[in-house]
Amino acid sequence: ITRNPGETEFHQAVREVLESLGPVVAKHPQYTDAEVIRRLCEPERQIIFRVPWTDDAGRVQLNRGFRVEFNSALGPYKGGLRFHPSVYLGIVKFLGFEQIFKNSLSGLPIGGAKGGSDFDPKGRSEAEIMRFCQSFMTELYRHLGEYTDVPAGDIGVGEREVGFLFGQYKRITNRYESGVLTGKGLSWGGSQVRTEATGYGTVFFVNEMLAHTGQSFDGKQVVVSGSGNVAIYAIEKAHQLGARVIACSDSDGYVVDEAGIDLELLKEIKNGHRGRVADYAERRSGARYVAGGSIWQVPCDIALPCATQNELDGTDAKSLVENGCLIVAEGANMPTTPDAIRSLREAGVRFAPGKAANAGGVATSALEMQQNASRDSWTFEHTEARLAEIMRSVHHRTLATADEYDVPGDYVAGANIAGFIRVADAMLHLGLI
Ligand code: NDP
Image 1 (cartoon, rainbow, N blue to C red):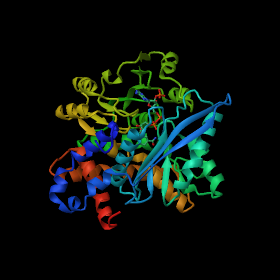
Image 2: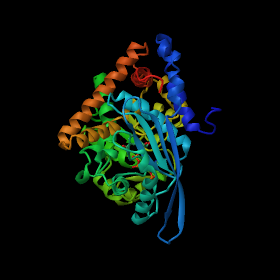
Image 3: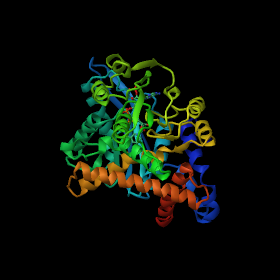
Image 4: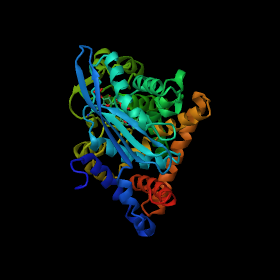
């Protein structure tokens, strides 16, 4: 805490991992001897830079850009870029730290990183967003490369922004280096299923949790927070598997639609320009909009927080428990506060942390890198089958590790320990790096 003052989200993320590692260090003193945990908590490299750009009125605007290259023991740095006014070093470091363990747990050859800017895309024209992305990449490009650091999207960064970033990288370097960014469009090196991957992957993971106790999505009531990339495709896959998603949200409020969210309508409203769920309620008969308030008041069997960090707190957890919720799985990164996790688990609600449940996004990014490296492109069906298989193995690895360390059924400990061991072993093998 004294070494990284004021970075509260980073402290929260580190504490959550360290709380799980007691049994591992007790059993394997080599990690302590080599100071692996202290080294893991210190990023290999942190880049903070100025991003000047001109708005449509010709005024100069200034933002701050970040890239925290946290750990490259398992492969090139990999993790998304977030454009949101709340972004500062503590957010980027928490996301980068989580990314190390998630990527390790996925079993794929990728290191951990995260980046972004305090730029707020809301209300900005397409030309302003392009100029911002070009200025951002004009500094960042020197730190990237398919063998070095491969960013992707996150909040506020979708295919359009990845396109502007890739265009500027290509222009500066004079290289069509597809593998330098993931989340690209299908006609310029992107992968099928990348757009859907995080939401689909979260639902695949929950499907494994259900199957583990002989249940299925069929007939289950689901609440999904957010209405962005992760939320939309979580809703889509949950519907395909026979569940009914009855509520979703944005940062202004939430909508309840007992007949099941009409995804076509939701997609039409969002359609790249971040339309409001209030508009959905206006256009859909029977739907009810609640401004502000907490979506977790809505009774459900399965809750999928897919919006942002710390959006589900202790009070929300209490409501979920009282309403008989069975499973909470994180589509977003760290959306559940520590006291909420504690309440859920004490009440017997099964809880899947983002490191495991939302690993499908980065895993499919790794599949995009594989396709770029072999100049190939796979079909939707093949890529989705690979994603489902990866989520099955993440689920299996998480539970098997929890069993091995005498915490059966504990998805938090299982994911943290399995993620830690793979990356820690690589760090030991690579020497003091
Ligand atoms: P998007 O920008 O596409 O969507 C974010 C959504 O969350 C928007 O609907 C936004 O509403 C809403 N939101 C933001 N803050 C709040 C809040 N306080 N309360 C309710 N809703 C809110 O981002 P993504 O869907 O890509 O990312 C969502 C989460 O998933 C993030 O935590 C991200 O790190 C994580 N994630 C994303 C991956 C990906 O592949 N995209 C991979 C793994 C994790 P509004 O429009 O009002 O801002």
